[in-house]
Image (cartoon, rainbow, N blue to C red; front, top):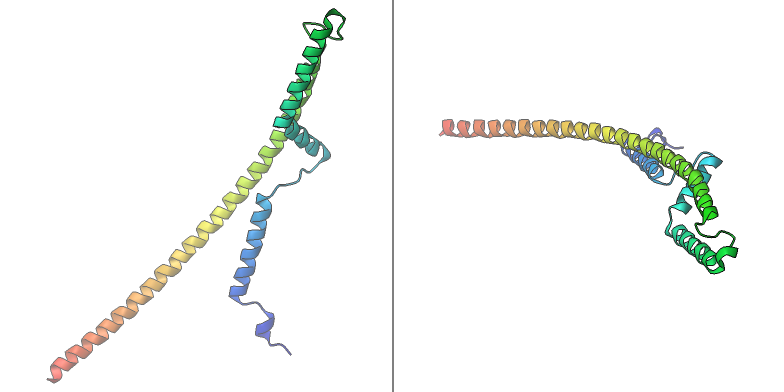
Length: 166
């Protein structure tokens, strides 16, 4: 049969368990938070794609091919100079990608705000814990000074008693 002291965690074990849980929550906060809806995931995917060098290089190549292809065919090209169809396509792309990127940025701003709030709460708890530790150290220091003072008084009393006995 186990004793009661083995079944209940000690203060040290409880503190270690609490620290592990706190570290796990901090790691979860620091990790990538999944978007909560399909629309948010789509907005993030579009923002990540449009904001990449790969997209810029591919789009630049496509635009160069469009312009060169239309320049080679001249008047019989599908979009002769001044490239009105190309302008329409780029305007359409900008009209849709800009608000989608802003939605992604707003969601990321919400995530950042949530993380900042959580970090602030952790900092407040850490500050309170540090203040508590300072109080403990001050108390220990006072106890140590009192014990040293008592020892010095005892030593002085012995010295005086030794002088009087001579």
